[in-house]
Structure formats: C-alpha cells, structure tokens
Length: 297
Length: 280
Image 1: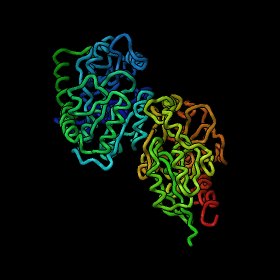
Image 2 (image 1 turned 180 degrees about the vertical axis):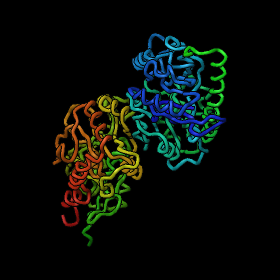
Image 3 (image 1 turned 90 degrees about the vertical axis):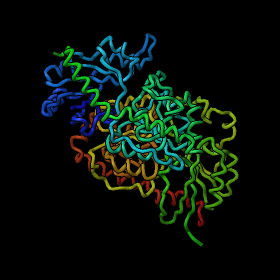
Image 4 (image 1 turned 90 degrees about the horizontal axis):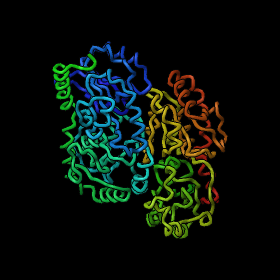
C-alpha cells in the first residue's frame, strides 16, 4: 500500500507499520514535484493501492496507467456556500486543477465540503484524516508548569488569537517543517495542545485527533464537523483570544483540573488510529471498485 | 573584594535569553529573570534583592513599569529591542500595549541610566563549530511570522527542508534546534533596514546565514560571512544550491563563525557594563 503526499503534513496521517495484511510505504510528493519520478518509484514498489493526499497536486494523467487502485484523499477546507473566505476560494481554484481520471475513488476529510468538491470530483466517502499509530501515547501527568504547543502555520487569524497567550506563557509555536521522529518527540514533551483554524471559517483540523492521540489536553476553536468529538468532554472549546488566554491560565495554575477531558479525548482518539481505519477503508475500497467499477477503467 | 561583575538581566527567555550566559564566564556573574510586558514588577524586585547585582539590564525599554525601574537600588540600563510579535496586533484589546492605564505606567528611556542600542550579544554556550547536520542541510527560521515574511519564505518552505519556530524556543530546546540545522534564514516584517535579534546567534552556532541586506551591517560582509538575498526566488535558488553542494558554503560558515566572536557575551558584556561594576 503506497501513501503519497508531502511528508511534513501527511506522514502523520498514514499507516506506518504493517497492519491486517497492509504493507505500507510513504512516497514524498508535493505541489510542483517530479511526477515521473514519483511514478517510477511507485512502479518499483508495485502497490495494490495508492492513497494520495491532496489529489489536486498530482499532474494530469499521471496515474492513468498505474496498475493499482488509487484513492484520492481531500485534506483541505473548501467553500460551503457562496460567501466564502478568500482562502477557501483559492483552495477551490486549486481543487479545480484535479484530474479526476487519476483516481478510482475520492474521500474528503470533511462531509460538509462534499457538495462543493462534488463539482469537480465524485466524493465516495467522508472521514477524518487518520492518525499514525506511533503518535498514540498514554495520558501522563502534566508538567509544572504544563508545556503548551501549537503546531501550525502563522496566519493573521491565528496570531490574533495567540498573542495574549504567547504573552502569558511559554507557548511553543512550530510554524512549519516538523515531521517524523522529531514531531513524535516534540509531542511527547508537551501536555497541552492548541488547535486554531487557518482563518475565520469552521473546519476540523487533523491536529486535533493527532494531539488527542498523544494524550494532550486539546484546546480548540469550535470544530465543524465534530467527527464524534464533544466540546467540554473530549476537548476544551474557546471562541476568542480572551477565552484561550483564560483557559491556559487555568490549566497553568491548576494542571489537573481537566484531567478527565484528557482521558476522554485520548479514548476517542482510538477512532482515528491508522491501523484501524485503513484496513477497513481499503477493504471497502477494493470491494466497491470490484463491484461497481471505476471511471479509471 | 571580588572583581566579578554581577548583572541581572530582565526579559523573556524565548526572545533574549540567548544573549545571557547561563554558565559563569570570567569576570561576569549573570542572572536572568523572566518578565513579560503587562506583569507587575514584584518578581523582578525579588530577584534583584536575592542576587544583589551591581547593575540591572532590561531588554526592551518599555517592558517594565517605571515604578519598578525606580525602585531598583542599582543602575538600571535598557537594551533597546522590540517584542517578537507579528505586525497587526497594535490594537489587540487583550494586549497591555493597547491599555492606556498600562501605557501610562511603563518606563521610558528617561527612566534608565542608559539605553543600549546595539545588536544583542550571544551567550558563550551557543558558540559551535560549523558542522554537517545528520538530517541534511535543513534551514532554520526562528521568530514570528507575518505577511511579508511568509511571502518571502513560502516557496522555500514547500521546496526545501525549512523549520520555522515562531515562538517559545529557549534553553535546551533552542540548542537542539540550532544543532539540527545547517542554514539560518533571517527576513524582516517590512522593508525598513534592520539587524535581526538572532543574526549573531545563527553565526555563532556555525550556521550558514542567509539574510536580507543588513543595515547596520555591524561589521558583517555579504558574500564573506553570510549570504544576502533580495526576494523569494533568490532564496529558493540559493537553498537549492546549498542542498546540492553543502560543502561549497563551508568557508562562508567558517568566516561567519569567526565574525560572531564580535558578539560573544563574555567579551561584550564585561566591557560594556564595566563602568557599573565593582571597579567602575
């Protein structure tokens, strides 16, 4: 089973160890990358299935002759109506570059974008991006003071929310470039993780499930969709900079106050575990293509 | 009577901590107290009472309340530096800068015995020999982002190995990040000339410094001890060359490391602060 995507963002969403008959390998590919080199690497691996994150960056026709079932995994937020944020409109323009004939099936990370994405691609399923098993860790005692982490690029919306929190506590903000062992180690050294949307529009970022899996207390803006998570039970929800600052101040002063939220969040994260999600998804994919065929074939 | 100069530094470890030696250096006994804008000065006063310094150095002229500066019984100097914060937050209602009551109480240049306006020094423990990083020529950016900074970096981030830590890095974590990189990129919020607060740190750590034009240059020379860029495409191209042949830039790294000696804290601080010491 081949996973294709930009390592920094998607290695953490892939299956990294064999599970239920799936033998995975990750192939680095990013926008503007060398498609022919990727194809050569894939051909030498001879996968039965290729899961491709951000199918919109794959050159047209690249997978036309690839002897494998290909699954595109949409990972970017898209407009949900006519009055969309400029950032979403840009992503929609990117999506329109997708060559649908590269893929047997397409999954979207968000059911609420399926209708919009459906203008370009037929969406087969919607599910959250899975979390690689190596990120799962037990809930451990909080540090004194708790160590707070935000992993995500800097945007005006995020910086506005983070500014008071950054002033109050030693919040580590990794804006870009961490993956693999370094990311795992970083996760293990922190207790509290933040999730903030790119801009002022709703979404569900995969860092939520990633941090829940790591046993972190997750403090997030409102999630939409929820993917089964409940605010106040599995994570803490904040709506503005003041609430974020207040929530962090409480955690710093009383580190155990939200212990049960961490425990519940960690349990819910099992629903995102890569070794559980991918075997079922791939079995379903192969059965579906076998039964109903594919636009590729 | 000891000739050692005792200095207490006041600031944020993640922004200016790299300028203060954590271990004793000859002639200088430095201590650091964490202080953030908007906080009361009681912690600083308690630190001063405990460490009995000859002189106190505050990073950022307006970071302490004026009353705290006046309450310190030894000379207090300010080291001019700006908060590591993105542009566009000037009117944020939850930041102390926007609160007129806070603004009325903060110190100004007139409250200090002297305001130092020169690049930050680099603590001796950050000096390292230029070396190859195990993971390849990763480029490092430390510090806040912003619209202009992202415009300059975005293509390089997506085409090369770039690690950007926007906030909160200090101590061992800072040392580990520096040790894992071979290149450092320093770009600015706006078109105004400047000299970034971590430029000397990057050189001292033995990294290949890639920067926009420096003004003041403070003795640094593009093409000799660092590389200069003027835009995003140039940065992408340069990082590509570094990745293809890291060894080709070794001499520049070596020269940058030598130039960093001018910023070594154990040289800069005793000389700069001597007038306030036991023999001053």
